[in-house]
Amino acid sequence: MNVLKLIFLITLISFKAVSQTCSYKKLSKEFDFTITLNSKKLDSIQVLIKITNKVSQKIQALKIETEGLYIDSFNDCKNVKSYSTKINSELPTGDENDSGNFIVADFNFDGMEDLAIKRDVGGNGGPLYAYFLQAKDKKFYESLYLSNTVEFFPIEINSTKKTITTFLHANAYQKNRRIFKYNQKAKKWKLIYDKLE
Image (cartoon, rainbow, N blue to C red):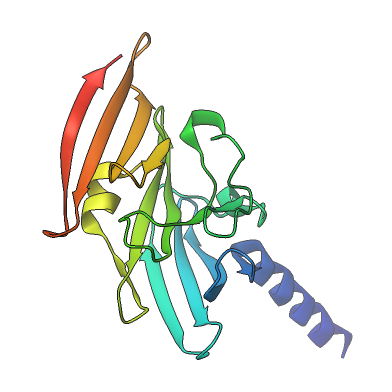
């Protein structure tokens, strides 16, 4: 019997070492989130996001396979922001443009909450994010343009001008400012400014 207890304990400890779950009920006015990370190997984790509609209780699950992200990158479940409910939204961007592990904001200026989640620890410019935009059906779909072209978290989200701005370490002496404008009719982004400063 003691051997079985020991095996159970070792299994439980091993599972905790390679998996982590954070739950959020106050980041959104409409949704609750549960984020579970499962380590596949040292620098590759699977991120599962369970999204529960507070009213209908409908659930959507998103899955991200990452490379270059470590499970300890998410050690602090409090490292999140919500521009919707103002949780941590006034905190400055951290070291190397790290704006948190999970962010709720309106990225495409349609009045609906969208999501960004850290997908890579990145390099000199900071971590890379995967972006999910909410559609009229209340489901979230990945924005390949934001995830693959913008990649970094913006230092400014300007709902009046419909722009987002990134400002990244480019070399030893300069930073790269890039401004992306969203055309709501065409539902497309365009890079309108890209300069070293």
